[in-house]
Length: 178
Length: 309
Image (cartoon, rainbow over all chains, first blue to last red):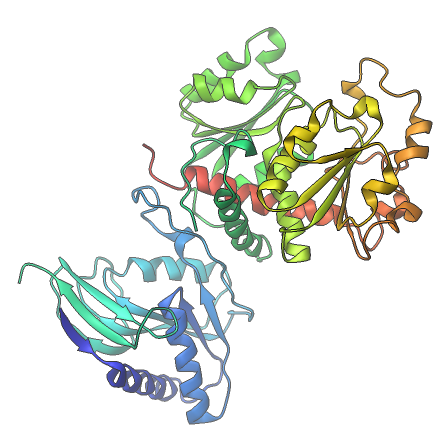
């Protein structure tokens, strides 16, 4: 077991990403956050709070459940529980920042992009992740990354966030041949 | 939350409270899908759902069809009157032919109790019961339970009065079965000729006294007078039924303040329910219809949205 990020490092990464989002978009105009259930939604809420502290503005934040858009529904044996998508703003012509905890194969993001396309036509979609662990299977990249972690495919990246999991924030790499 | 383990949905008696809660939770997410501009998700892309209806139905058939379509499944409808069933083919033979066309799930309605079970035993398809005889109509009960939970925020301790032709009502039987699992208490009420003997064994109260039934009710569910199932004369006259049992504005006052008024449809206005009540502020009859799609999407998704074994 290898601790990659502790509570402080997660906190700083979130604040840095918040600054980068503001810098890239030249402020908060039309910027909306969309967190992918479950931990992406937690991170989106934290980013929203960080942006409020920096700019003094509350930007819209929604929660996306991508399970209905997965490409492996017919293959996986354990069926995911479908939870509500809670996006109470019109995404059309907005600059959406999609938020997730770990970027890996890119298939979750592909599903999220399809889900967002069914909700409207955003001006653009950017991607923010806490961890990029590599091994992409689709042509997808993140715009904002908390930390790049080289991993082997047989390893597991475990993200713990206080709001959704037991215990303090951390990112841990487990398992693998080495 | 429990994991879904069933291949078919034939009767709520085969399900647990955990199963019902999972369906309700899943249905809540699907309700949001139906409120979107683009009312479609790709979850069941490539699946085929057949509607096999040997009995007339508008609401249930259309509801299942929309539910399947909003999940991106392909649908086809076979109605008895205009199919080979009218030429003497048995239901099972029709179903086997449908299966031979690689259909994944069949939604069946039939006047004979137990018909869906025959299809479940005789074919490899998933089977959803959309009403069999006087026995069972699980998705109607599920959408009723969903609506009660949505409106009242709970089902535990809720008192539900089901009024009318209990004898011939599969809706009543499925509701009793589901509501009791969900912690509600149920009282059934109607003329003694339409109250099945031994219904108390399902865990409900039974009375011919409408005042007693409505008093303290949080939900008043009126059932349709099923003239097509009453070959024998169960009632002296419809007028007498109306006088004794019709849910009128005056009678509704016996129930709890803001009690929900429900009806599975189609309604016979002025017979089992007064028009002012059906259209009144306490009525959730049309919301039941809206919720029906979400609940049926949940059922189809849970039955089809995983790897075949």
